[in-house]
Length: 566
Image (cartoon, rainbow, N blue to C red; front, side, top):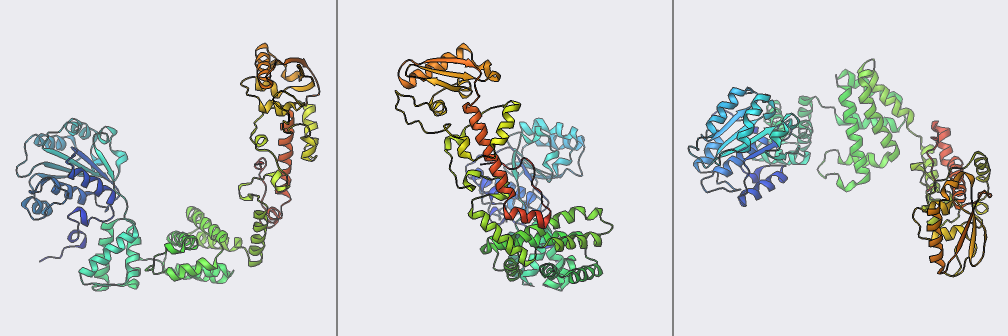
């Protein structure tokens, strides 16, 4: 008997044995059990994830002699013939080889005839995106209203090329790439049943090379068995795949942490002598750094059977998180730019030297930690380039003031005055501007800004914010509006503001308006307070020791207008 490759021998024949597509299996199982069958299905996903296999299992479920079921018996004539690819009512079409409209018309002409042996006539069209535009148009009507005995199952690796008119007529299921752990576990199960010895590390390498495709993993396993003489060993799989020995990557990181430039260059030359792709090396280095970052943050997530587990956890202890992130970014950028380098060796070594140049030494790292701790204790979120000046200076502001938004445009003279005032203490600027309203509902204590905040105003709030209190008694309040805001003194706004104040004090209050005054309005007061907060925030950032260390050590600059008080 001729040898049957693993990918065909171990192709799943039921939903229960399908690996890694639980979300699709669950949907199809429920639909079959409830007899809620659609006339057209579309399976999408990369190569080797189970699209055609799933289509054949669905065909068996529809035609099994025990009835429509999510668990086909596998022994009846329909099931066995479908497994062998000989079932007369299962028509499989390779759209890549039959792209023309004539082939599609012949196919659809036969769809009108009743099935010969099965319950349904099932059409599986693989790589359906390869059909021509005319062929798609020819199948649209049949796809929308097929005979009751016809089911279409379409499969594609590129759904973007399938017309939306076809997509809208199908139930679409996206098959995921296989997780590495799923591939490794499946390979272990197969090799155990095949009585072939293996090393777990070798299966991890095959899983990684398969890049989410179970079929690729099984093909590589077949190759590894032949290469190793009925065994699957790590060293032989590495040689077969041309994979980089992970020990090189660990040695590179050790040399970086030891600030050993000679070792870095020596290892790079050794890799060149082995004809290792430096582009692949940077990719594997970035992948290793990612694994270290995960081990550093969530050590319990590192699988116990992972070959590199101990080495990963050891590195996670030795390397600082900020240094790790720096290396990862440089590796990504190095891989992106390696095509622009004079040659791959230069691009690879330059990335390593860049990592070496930016690796903080132990004293700098300790100092940085101290500075970060100091800043954190002062509640300054430096990382977001923001500062809250009142908190930094040990002062308090009311929530109402912090939430107030004022559209105030000072004149040129006012702006110069505000710039000077920004350097004064906040208490001076806020004097008599935001004190609490201690008066009862029938008395006014002269705090105009607090009264404005307490009133329920609509559009008239703009007029109130730009008014300066001149005088007041029990029956009247005199207000002044700056020349630049005199357009707000309209009869409508005056009436609304008068009504709101009279309702607040539960008696009629007369408002008198004039143009001019010193301009000490709530709008100006809040603008001054914001200017003061901004100045304090900028001073807090500029004078911070950690920020100064970044500027001195790394040439960092503070981006103008990026500092905001919060």
